[in-house]
Image (cartoon, rainbow, N blue to C red):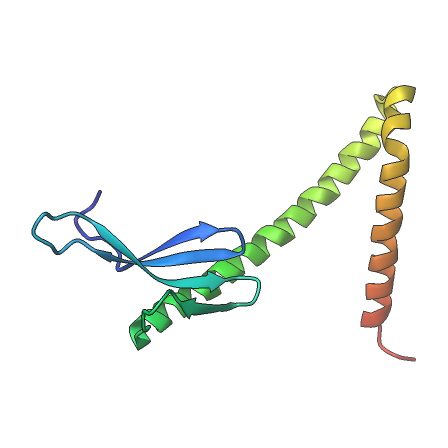
Length: 133
């Protein structure tokens, strides 16, 4: 580990993070991590942990982390969609050139329903974005 530890540690968890304040300035030079807050990325907010009162510095650090995390999650979600397009193309190639009748029988109905659902949503969203007239 380096000599300079960050002031905060964010333990990622599903839908957010637990925020810890890092302290190593004690007699034993042990690293102490005290939980100070809980972040909810679904809601885009945070709250203090237990009876801890967040300072303005705490709030600023958590807000900055939350903004960065939300941007990262958004970028990952968009990347997942681009990968899905690739997978759909690979699935098309597989179905056309390699799939057996039994394999196609196993997946066809589920794929058709999923694609129909996706197409319906995309067409509706596209229509909502088109200008009137």
